[in-house]
Amino acid sequence: MIQYRGFITLQWVMARLPRALAYALAIVVARFAFLFARKARSTLERNLSVVLPELGARQLKVVAYRNFRNHSKAYADLMRLPIARVEDLAGLLHVEGVEHLEAARTRGKGVMVISAHMGSWEVAAAIWSSTIAPVSLFAEELEPRELFDWYRRTRARLGISVLPATRSGLRKVLEALDANEMVVTAIDRDMLGTGLEVEFFGRPARIPEGPAAIALKRGTPLLPVCVLRNPDDTYQAIGSPPIFAEPTEDHQADVRRVTKKLVRHLEEIIRAHPEQWHMPHPIWEPSQGLPEGSKLHG
Image (tube, rainbow, N blue to C red; front, side):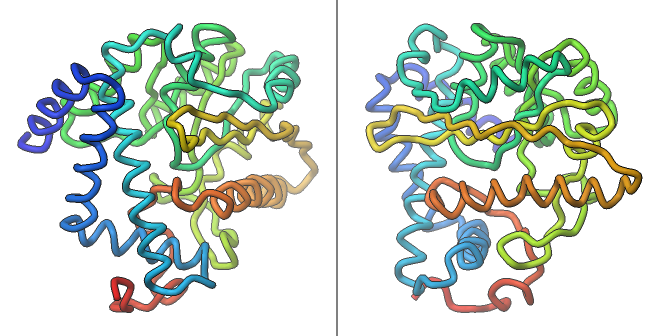
């Protein structure tokens, strides 16, 4: 509850500041977080060292700090959602590859938008929900419950449904796809612990297999998309050609094949924009990345 009350207090301030000042405050918060959230910073740097093995410790630290700044700005965007208007947000978003989204939607089986933990997804989701089709975010439940409820209410105001990464949430995902809606999910972290082990940046990692399984069973197109922050704090949504999964007689091999194809897209996005991939959670076993206790902060 202390965490929640602190969040709500900061949110109240962020929502009432001009956008530029909100970002300035976010940068201050990022500096403190970078200094004192040592466990999160260490895990992030360990993950980034797998993505960027050529970097030395000091270069890695610079990328990690920029990563904290971008993530803090994304939180500022989230905190300002209660006062946001879609028409104002639309002017900040530049889209590449909208034809890929249109190609996916023509199937009439909904669209699963596949991405990673990067960028301010609420901005793109709010715009798409008001102009193209309803959008749902399939995401992990946050603690405390009051914080997760705040997320759901805030996103719902802009037409975004939040579906928890649970079995009941999965049923709602299927209902949304049946209604030809869009469901956004990040697959760079196996939140349920039931993922398929595939190579991710050359090392075995657990990756959710649900999107591939749904696509193979129901014919739902998979659309890799990333939403990035530009240097001027506008946003860039980049869509890739949709993946239309074709089943064979070997379902498990099909799931692995499609999942690996999605992972290759994630690798390209993350490798190109490591300063925006905020992943302070373990992805690989310590022996697969940097050894535990490795010096990253020199």
